[in-house]
Length: 454
Image (tube, rainbow, N blue to C red; front, side):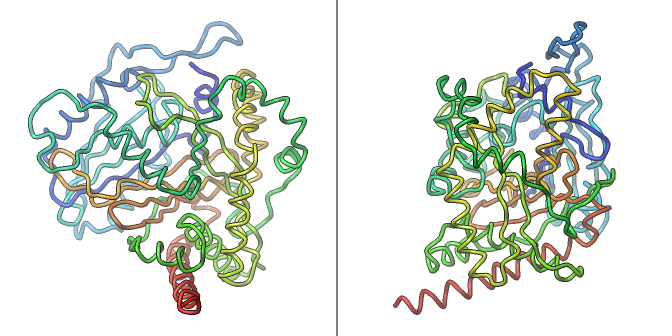
């Protein structure tokens, strides 16, 4: 097992599991037999790790490895469920939140899927995938490989399509995000051996970044604290992407700048409502290190880094937060921070479980959680002939992190979801409403500035 995968395998703890949560909803009731056939051919047969379980080395410092699960059966990983009436978002959230705090069994492959009927007029698939299998971008590509551009793309049991079409969906979205316009940054150049081996020597040259990573502290706010075991997933109704694009054009920023600034504004309002003076909120942002123009390797694995982004929630107006968001994001895009953290993660993955936990907790505790912003397909997709109506995915939190944010763009709409620690973030529904209100405020600002420019 690679060092990067070993880190996440060893980081599970009761109050923060290393599980990537994903949700896909469908317009109509799903033909589950056909869905399972597609899952078998496009995922289980293509990526062996979905049939393997982790095995620990007998040597004291030996790395774990993947072994075929002799008892593997698809039925051990797939659950069927029916939502109670009225089958709305609240009912689906209640269902997923009964599982989100439960560890995945270590005696089998580290994933499970819940096939849910009765969601509105259709169905839903709730997936739980351990971070040791792969990073979030890779697993997004795996789940997208279930989909087709037309309803009749996989009505018959045929060979799975070439991976190029499916990985191209995400690659196109990221490249269209204006070379870093997505919070999930694309930095494949860091894969070159010269860059990787030079990571630690680079640390000596980048005093500012090293100071940021080592000396910065997490401020006390209503969204930070000591986590408990119980977590919650929740999400807001989608927002038209055209509104966000118009705001970005009117303010001379990017779609990503607008969405991250809206998150900063929502956190400012939440802090104030709960009796605190708004302060900047640090969050971790994943940086893609995979070449998006290549198919995924069969072994999957983790190829990403994390950078620390401080959301300007301490500023007093939407415009100030948007301008500062753009400045901070541009600064990170032009810095070697991702390269540095990638080298650190590789080194940490070779230190053994105790030191791994110490180092990961040390860096994780400088942020409230992880924020992802994934531009998905711009056109509708179909799984087993059924139209996908929404996609969401949450990265796990580590250390004492308490607030995760996912933003997904799909089929002309933007949707935000939160994964919160129920002990610390006690009113997460307010964050959803505050995010939508902040997008509306920024849209009004964009319209006003666009009229001034004319």
